[in-house]
Length: 71
Image 1: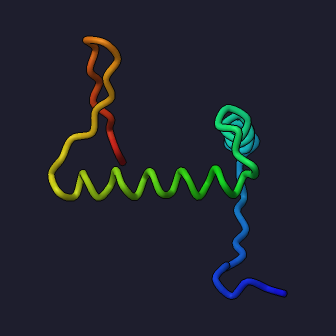
Image 2: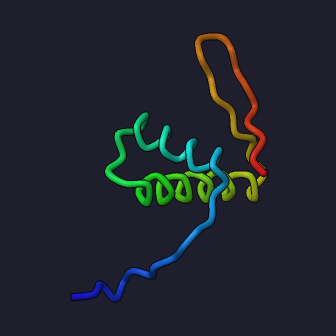
């Protein structure tokens, strides 16, 4: 039975981008490549909302602080 809440999409990836997707799936223990893309979209959307509201996005490790450029 089809799920009416889902839409099927198709993407063309370069070999490099597909390799990156596979690495992210393994690194994050995602159950599928679609899960990786959904998580990435959620993260990018959230970062974009912060940027639109005038926030800068940073990551911090110990005393080191780096600005993240969100395209």
